[in-house]
Amino acid sequence: MISTSTLSLSNIPPTPPPATAPPFSDQRSNPSSPTASSDPPPSPEPQSRRVRLSPQLNRWSRARAVRSGRRLSRPIERMTVSDSPSSFASDTSNGSGSEVQTLSPSSEGGGDGDRLTDVRGSAKSVFMVSDGTGWTVEHSVNAALGQFEHCLVDRVCPVSTHLFSGIDDVDRMMEIIAQAAKEGAMVVYTLADPSIAEAARQACELWGVTSLDVLSPITEAIAAHLGVSPSGLPRWAPGRNSSLGEEYFRRIEAIEFTIKQDDGALPQNLHKADLVLAGVSRTGKTPLSIYLAQKGYRVANVPIVMNVDLPKALFEVDPEKVFALTINPIVLQTIRRARAKSLGFDDTVRSNYSEMEYVKEELEFASKIFQQNPIWPVIEVTAKAIEETAAIVLRLYHDRKNRCSMPRISKRY
Image 1: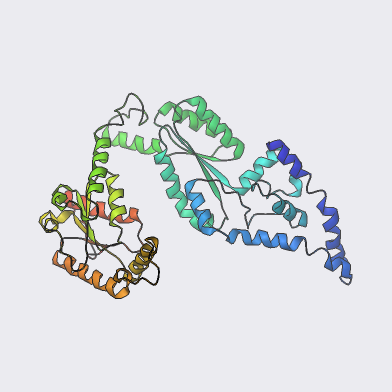
Image 2: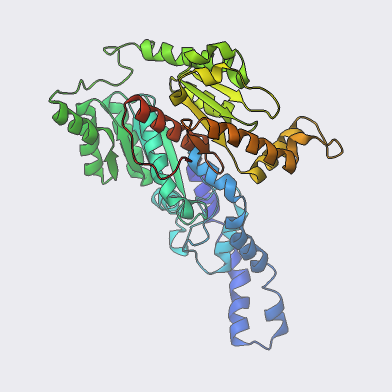
């Protein structure tokens, strides 16, 4: 299929130039000719306009595609493309992908090597290889790609990521590296077996593939620090402890506990929780609780509603495990209005729930409760992702648990 698409596309450019090139040359040599100046513009102008506008469409969806690892298949605005109208015709005539959109007149031969050059020009590939699930290498690459969002979104440097998990033998690793060499991709790998990791390093060096070993440097550093040699076994290897170990069941138990304690249910069990979240409605208590539960923490959340008494157990538990959540009133009102619409309430149905005056009063009511309990940290969740808020909660929790107090600028985080 690759060869046929290349041949068919290579046959397209020869036909347009005779029809479009002479009018441009005539227009420059004889500006007074009306036919030469009026005929050519209609074909190249709409096509070039489409090429210029495409990088500005769907910016959010393109950024999301980069993070999720899907291949980007649209043309690149700042790519070096021939100025001839035939190149724009080849750009817009193909709706299947971006591999032909960088074809220049010198690459019309349609060879396999030319096509691979086009792939490298359209989107740089990063192969992520792991002998396990690939969680470590995938999150490491995504964290690094986050430093290039300014150009990934604008499609100046598009990247396509591909995850290869469960690679536990040299032959499969060599196949991936050979494909990376063919496509000009970078290989980032986390391989616990030193022999496979060394074979991958040598193969990448031999074939000129850019590579990075994420796991070996930190493993060797920790081994030197502990004075103990690593096992060299992947996380899910038969020789290691079963994945259904104590940590696994602890996470399952934490998730079950957190779901049962959602939205103030069963307040008598608050003393069993590792973390207790308190805040007004729509401050993200439930998603934050579930996120923390997946990390193995038993979390309970208690809603604060004006003119509704809070459970006495909230003030009887250890105050060092209670965390207060607050939010900007304007943002909270927007969230509540969206929530009301999702529940089927239209603009004709008015409720105090999303009215600004009520929102401010409820936040003030919650603030007074927080002031009466100064040990509770007050975390501002406005413009914070769930992961950011969770990181603050866990840092404060472990600081208190380990009695490792760090200097803090204010009581709000």
